[in-house]
Image 1 (tube, helix red, strand yellow):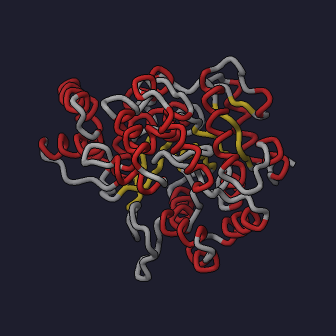
Image 2 (image 1 turned 45 degrees about the vertical axis):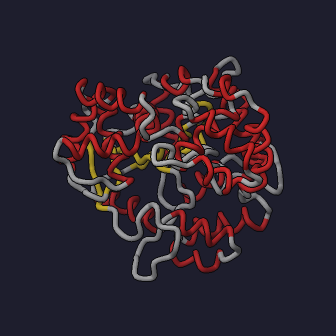
Length: 388
């Protein structure tokens, strides 16, 4: 059977994601496997709903198997995020499909080969080690080599292809042109068919979920409404004071040993924390051209959860089953017989001695505090329609 893989966050799952599902099926997908961020997402924040609910929405909307992209890779920069996702997905899919602004597979492959070259890596590493922002350096180094400016999905696409070349060279690739509002858009664009997930989150967070309904598949909207009504949507502001206090009291030199806290990030965050009274002001005081919001948020999250560079540079030790259809369960059974990355089907069975497990537990503890209901992961799991 043709198994298509999608790397995703579904935060929330909107009509653009449903379009990608439909395109995969048009291009021959018989089963769709999603590797989805857990409770933390790529820009260093927390998902608006827990991973089991978002995975449930994905299966209602057409996915067959949803596996977790675990922490800390789910909150890593594009290279870490992409490599970990491909590392998991290579055992379950023969084709990777993704959206991109350029939607030119040949050009994306050229860029992937370029960023994987020793010459590019040497220049990139030297500049970032000197304190320059990784995202800006990445874009500038590609531009110097004659490539066009990239959108956020293009950057991830290049990361996927660079990872595929080393981990799964036989995997086929399909790209779909990303249309509608850009990833960074924070307001609803009435003329756009597809809205950004960020703009939709703002509607939910401001109590205007009904305005988001037209941009979300009915099945997804129903899942998120259920979470809202149960008080289970994330309210990140609940953690603001705790994180601010942590960095006020922390030793910047000790924090600098953690992932994304080096290069002066920890010192800047600690200094800014001592001078500000709330989270937005803290980020504003710490932000520079080199220290973008995403890098600062990752530094805060990785510092708070004690994520080491060694862990982030390693491959995931296991993934977790989040949801599956009948076809997805059959696929999982097939792949288990052929080996590959271990799949944990019950959270209680996760390897307790794994650094991944310890880091994930710390991140989930923070995530739980950011939710009004404050229920445990075990309680969340009981409510999932695919684990009842």
